[in-house]
Structure formats: C-alpha cells, structure tokens
Amino acid sequence: MKRSTRDLPRSYGRRFHRNGGVLTSWWARACAALVLFAATAIALPAQTFTTLHSFNDTDGANPYAGLVQANDGNLYGTTKNGGANNGGTVFKITPGGALTRLYSFCSLSNCLDGYITYAGLVQATDGNLYGTMVLGGAHDDGTVFKITPSGTRTTLYSFCSQSGCTDGRYPEAGLVQATDGNLYGTTYFGGGQGDGGTVFKVTPSGMLTTLYSFCSQSDCAGGDQPAAALVQATDGNFYGTTLGGGTNGPYYGTVFKITPSEALTTLYSFDGTDGANPQAGLVQASDGNFYGTTYGGGANNDGTIFKITPSGTLTTLYSFCSQSGCTDGAYPEAGLVQATDGNFYGTTYGGGANGDYGTVFKITPSGTLTTLYSFCSQSDCADGDGPGAALVQNTNGNFYGTTFYGGANDYGTVFSLSVGLRPFVDTQPALGRVGQPVRILGSNLTGATSVTFNGTPAVFTVVSRSLITTTVPAGATTGTVRVTIPSGTLTSNLPFRVRP
Image (cartoon, rainbow, N blue to C red; front, side):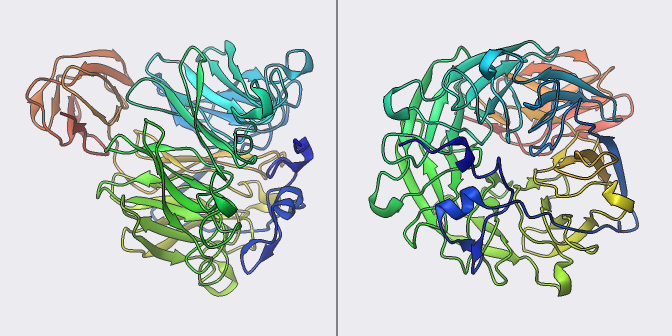
C-alpha cells in the first residue's frame, strides 16, 4: 500500500524524533513536526559574509538544495516552495546577487510538471540543467526534468509508471551525470523489494532503468531509503548513502557502492556511536577517500563528519556539539566540499554561537574543525536560518549557499562567504580519456593564451569570460590543469585524471 504524501520525510518537517540520536521509527521520522532551530553568527576576522538575496515567496521560498555554477558563470538553484503556484521554483542568481526566477512548478494542470523539490540541479554536457521533483508528474510520485538556462522545462520521466512503483517514487536527491553521458540518481521510496527506494539510470532523453531496489535483504541489511545524490568515483563506480537500514538495525544507515552494471555492495553500516542517518552524499577527495556527514549519532548524538576508504574502512573525524552550547554546530544535513586549500567546508542545520540556527564550518582532513559563521547574528535572522544544503566553491574562490529560513522575509536566503581563497578553474568532467571533450569553468578567462593538462599543451577555444572548451590532449597524464590568462595562471581545484 502506498504511503500518502503526508509520509514524506521532509515535506512536513525538517526534523525527526530521536532516541539516542537515531530514528525511533520510520513513521516517527516521516511525520515528525518541524523543529525550528534558533542560532548564531559572528564571522572570524579575514572573512566576509554577505546575504545576496532574501526570497519573498513570489520568487521562491525555502531553498533546501545547494547551487551549481553553470557555463555562463551564474549560479542556478531550486526552492522547495513559493513561486507563482507555491510548487517551488528554479532560479538563476549572479555572483553579485541579481536573481531571476526561471520557472514556477505546478504550472500545469494537476501539477503534471511536478512540485516540491529538495534537490539541486546538475548541468550536463549538453548545456541543459537536470533535476528531480519529489511530487507531481503523471502519477504524483515525482519526476525527472530538464530545464534550459533560459527557463524552458521538459518532464523526462514520471515515477511510479510501472506496476507496484518498481521504478521508484519520491526522488529526494539530485542527479549526477556519469562519464557514459547518462544521469544517475536515487528514489526515497518504491522499488521491487519493499518500498525501500531505488538507484536508477536515466538517459538525457528520458529512458529510465532501475539498477537496484533497496531492502532486498532481510531486515534491510543492505540499506533502506536513500536520501542523497550519488557520486561517480575515479574507479567508475558510484558511491552513496542510505538514511536507514544496515546490519546494526533499521535506523542507522549505510554507505554503499554500486557498479554501472548494477552490482551493489554495502561498504559500511553505522551503529549510532560512529554516526547515524546520513542524509547527504559523499565527496571523493584528492586523497582518493570519501568524506561525508551523518545527521545524528556520534559522541553527542548530534551528528558527525567521517572519512571512508573505497574498501569500506570508516573513521569518525568529528562529533558535533562537542563545545558548550553546541557552538560548533549540530545536525549536519548537507555534504562537504573540498576547497582549493585542501580543507573541507560545510554547514550544520542547527547549533552555533547564537542559539540553534546553524553554522558554516571548515574541517581539515585530519579532523580539526573551525566554526566560520553562526547564523541569526542579525536582527530577526536577516542573514539566514537553517542551512540545509552543501556549499559550492565558485571559481572566483568564494563559497555560496542557501538557508531554508530567515532573510528579510523569512523565506530563506542565498549567501556568499569569502575566506580569502584564490580564483581557480574547474574541469567538467574531472576525468576522461584522450580526445574527450572537457569544459573549463573560470572567471575572467577572456584573453587566455594557453591550457595545459599536467604540462601537456591542449588546443582550446575561449567561449566566454567564464568558459573554455578543449579536449584531453594526446600524451596527457593525470595532474592539474592550468590556464594562463593576462593577469596570471589559474590552476584546477582538483587533479584531472586521465583514464586509459
């Protein structure tokens, strides 16, 4: 029997009841009331925090997802609510803060275009943006959609199109474009095993294949209900997390690997002491390991940051609420980003120096954490409240993010944080074979005179001040990409990995 829309874990509350930091039951998580956290702010010296935009409901409300930097140098994102029909929006915002609403969901009869999203967007190699809606579509079980940078939207797939919703339903997570050109993602419910969610592949034209159905093992030992996006690692496989399931009981969650050929391996099962309920995905760092967060569990039952090797050896790097009053933050809902200084940056939904409104933090690969900013440092939380999304480091060196609440109208914000990091270039994708097309994103690329892959020169075209197109040159080896511009040399944030 299908659960009603009231059972959505995030649509009717950003919190679940906890028992030692973990879920007391799936129904408790699904129906938990929203707990508004109150919180913090105070920037450290050499930092600049800026509220770029406060949503006003008509242009969107309650952005839960992070942003993506696109080819045109602008940032694109989504809001859960608001817009012309209160079904959520897609928006574009410049690094300076000028926002344009591109699309309002539920514009079609019966919301056939979808409504409510917790997921951000991904820009594919065709230049279009792709995302998911939790609800709406032909069966009111969510959709995969495509939208152009100018705002023309197309529904690619409506979930629960197969009997018993074996194709999945309620996709809470965003998509990732793999090296094969297809898009991969997860659904929170549905599948062929017990409504435990799925991993799927969908082509840019909308043909969907279910790769795996969770809860296929006894007591959901292999994981249950994935809420986060996948990451394709340098080995070509996909890695992700589930909010529940695992070998230590139904309420702790897992880390898993799945091959493009559909073989899934549970790499790690949380037990509460080492973390519980990972709501965010993983990031593969320059050392080859994966780093992530758990919403609950850890030494203080307020969430953790962890490192896990590709083979499944996990190390808890930090347990939140380790400082008096949880000034270091609590309940990280979002994943991490590795910045150009080698450190990881992220957000917590609660905790902080001003109460319980969330933080921005930095953590070293060895586990030393620094709280960079505590929200609600301004009157009426004009600077934002409750960051639930991962940060993105723009090629100008600054970080950009969103808050679910707060701002001038209490509908959420877009913010930037500068910590003094230098501009860089970002290669998309970050790995490939000789001859494969590569996009290089940056700032002020006009007048570029050379592009090299670990020292090997490449033929390139400057498309705009924010985009260069090239191909992996013959003889290239794994290493940094460098772009020479009139003002100096820009280096890639991660090594480009040349595949055989």
